[in-house]
Length: 518
Image (tube, rainbow, N blue to C red; front, side, top):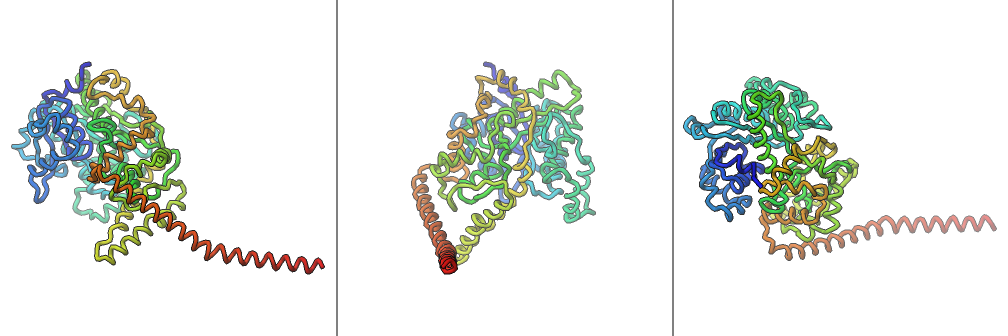
């Protein structure tokens, strides 16, 4: 079958911001492996003591490109061009000479953003709104541009329970906010104080600034061929480039790994909240297909009434909840079979919708063990670590509360039937979606996720699994012994005295009853 996506990208020059991020690297890998592109220009922020050549070599060595290196070993070197710059700077910090290299760029993928939920408002606006503005200004200078795809998020309108394929009215004007963050007469403290009033309806600065950025892109729909892509939480790949290939030690996958490592022991979540997860390879495939589709839309209508918006979520394809996922992982002992060398405590998490129970378990099973370990580290002359990690885990879950206690719905994955028909039998097939209702409770899928995370993110060789399992068995035995010891102490200190007193009272009362009856 004709590969319409590969045909569209053939011999094209593409400019990507955020190419060093999780989605960005997956897109670069897919373009190089499955599309005969001409050039890919990556905007890369210079770093102290690291040249662009160093960063390019480091990026090339990343595991996500190992399949590419085996299939097309010269593709990366021949087609990747680093462009030094920064989305926070005017014209992205790109010099006039380097800008001329972009004259033949026909596709821009703008994915650069700060994804920190607790980012300061000033910094979040500068990157997520100001960066988008600079990309749009650059795009206006490119005479051969045919598509600019802005990567947003499905949660850019978190005050809604049903999200439509449209732009919603922003609570504030993006121009005003952009001007506000660059004003020197407003201190960071003052701006942070204003944050709570400015982002009413938004749980954090990330969703607020992504909403503003969408409004900004929408204002350019008659000036540039723009579109907006809204993926939900991006998790590991199902098949491509490898089954279970992980994203990063952040977000949802980071929480699963912390669970497997015995660091995260309790989660506060509403039981019926779905895990709205978008596998990384499906995000990549749909994103590239939507670029092709945007090109077709603007080819037919130079002045569209509405901007093209695309959703990639599992809301209509899977209803798996976190407690259900937890049952599968525990039932098949996946964390035990693929146990990590870097385990802290025994894998497993207590899921509750009781705030009291959650806080009690945080103190009992996370903070208390962390404190004890840190005390041993200090006694050994080393730096304490665990309490710092536990504090970060707790704060991360706190800022994620709105997404762990609310369901967000939509009409489903945009143009799914169309993609299923056109992409079947190609490198961009979305066949996985046909069985995705059971995907996240599939044991093989869970095994792939933990196995690849262990190998790629934690750098643990698969050959170390037998040894790690033996160590885990020892930890479990010690834990059971500790439980028995505490149970014995409780029994001996409280139950036995109480039973003795109860027996004495019963005996005394019984004696009195007999005496009175006589």
